[in-house]
Image 1 (tube, rainbow, N blue to C red):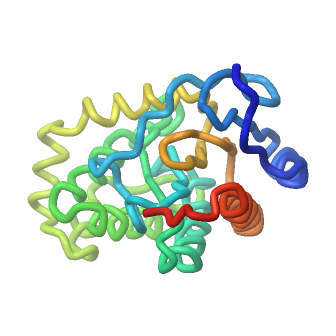
Image 2 (tube, helix red, strand yellow):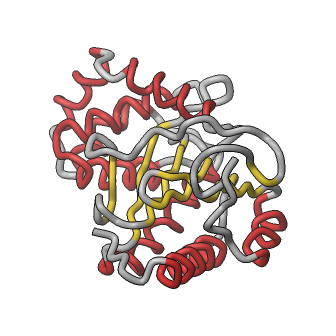
Image 3 (cartoon, rainbow, N blue to C red):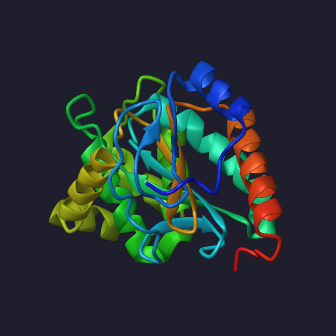
Length: 237
């Protein structure tokens, strides 16, 4: 493995361990190991087929693998919306959402994941994030949601509720949801939310669990500052 040409300050590592119970640093060149154990294979590159809030060409992308029935994901969703309110206008940070339904403990998670894909079919990433917001708002703290409410929630998000229901019932996105589930496992995900920070399409930082705003904000600040100092000409475009 080549010597890393990018590293995060140890304060982030310590904060991540204390807050998340596990934080892993990946080499900048994308090859080789992770500080702290575990293993990460290829994290799929971010493409325009992903659900992206913010600039698709942002230098830093925060990829979240999430379960729509996970209470921790519900809270982290709000954290990420606050992060994007802060950084979105700069174009330097983007949020990428990928489904990771933990079907062994959340029986409706795969159906809800498919519903979010159907929302994106109607209106792209904007519709996707509006709909996921409605889903999380309607989901109880124990993660439960009445699936019969999905068409109404879609309508609240400005979508065609009946069309979305037909899309879910058709199973159109069952295979895509299953594929994203497998991809999350391949990155070393053990739970949700599973968060991967990427510069370009190179994973540099992995966090597990419901990270607070201060943790995510601090990591973003350190990454952008370090990236700017090592690559002053970088514009993120």
